[in-house]
Image (cartoon, rainbow, N blue to C red; front, side):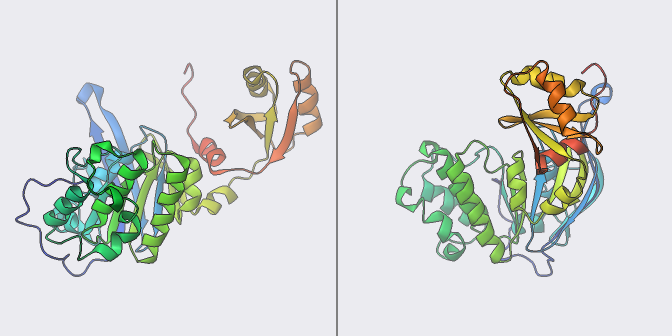
Length: 327
């Protein structure tokens, strides 16, 4: 959550003229010294339109947090430029801070304050009140309101998540940035959270959400697959899947490690990797399932093979650059 040292420059309401969108052009971010420089972002470009749920999907270390911190004016880029709600992230940082809500991946509210005190504090920063904007947060806050006297540090993961989202929304932002908001919470809380995001979208709020969970990509209007600071593709979730043209076989056996090694050695397998209780094998288009089965049965017991449709995770694996030899 954004914590400002003073609020003298924060206005009572957002300045007029915002477009509700986000534009990033060739963003670059470097960390470290000259000899040990790490390029966290390598020329990131994308556009998000008003009222869209836009997902930044990628594993830890992909550059998601650096990107969000730049877009919320908490970090300066080393190259490129960006606008948020029509305002430049460098020149117009004060306007942007008044217009966006930011929920970082790590719970960053005040642990010793109660639920109600945290929400009142953030409302006061933006010169508003809980009462004034209660209609925007009531669906979320009402679930934790019975515990409004409890200290934030004593809340469960799901309740902390709801409180953080309420604090990010209390000033009625036009754009919401959520950095891995469902990491570390249970499956029920994850579903409830995404239901809340859909309701916020219906109110016209633009939402950028990052996540390492590939299954959450399906819940976005569009996604950008991010790896090692580069965008691999931008499309609708179904569009990403439709671009995957190769056959996939799901395989299972008694010894899964041995099976994976055998799959990787087979000539008609282009790639193989664990996928839940199965391994997925990306096949060449002219492969014969019977030949693959005969090959695997030579050294594997209780082989189960079935053709399957690609998922977002399959598409991500296919788009990833190959690892250097020796890794």
